Length: 321
Image (cartoon, rainbow, N blue to C red):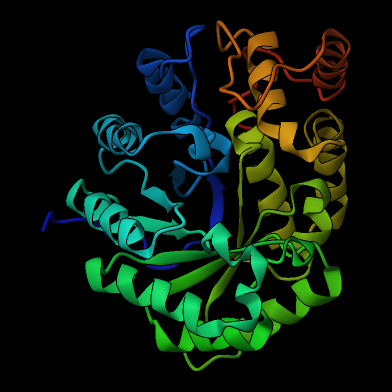
């Protein structure tokens, strides 16, 4: 077992990095290394997540995912903790990913519920318990559990979620995307009230200020690949109780919400790639099918929104004054 510095209490701003591809749909490792350098250089982030939705993990082969872990650790070393997403329908494969991540020196895991559970897994809690049993037998890395939107049928019901966190002490945080403000606040409060409190890091990036104000311990978002510096500034303002500063920073973030998170939501990471091309940070914005490139009109909209947010190639990853 490789010696790793565990990321025991996920908190603060955790960008989920994108995965650049070449025009012929191969992983662009050189661009990926540069992207890791850009994002990891943002003052104030607490970790980086790889192989998640932002990285188009559904289209990555297992070999590509394993290579991404190795490359990320080469680039980041222990300067910034690496959180590896575990995204698969197979609990056996999930255990293999977790084991490989630990052996490569990762500092934590982001575990997605298997999408096969969409057809009724929420009423079969033994399925998610078995999934986590396999993962935690293979690795003792700290875990962030991904809580899907309620309307996805992949959200874990609150009683099951609390049981999951109680039964598996390596679950240190929830990445909450439930999409329901009432449930979001209840989860935050009840997870904190456990005998072994569990953190909440939000991924409600389209209403980030409101979500953080409910008491989240941090945020984990693909938008951090573009605006991690603004996210750090917002999180710090909320933590300091400075509502005026938080509102001012949120005003800078809001145009990027319209750029990234408008309908259809599945294009959000495609749009982030286009923003990085517009900003001169990437040479190309290629996505693997079935995802497709945004239309020319939408790319122009992203360009306008990036300008409204005041983002430039020189300032996009710099500390916000």
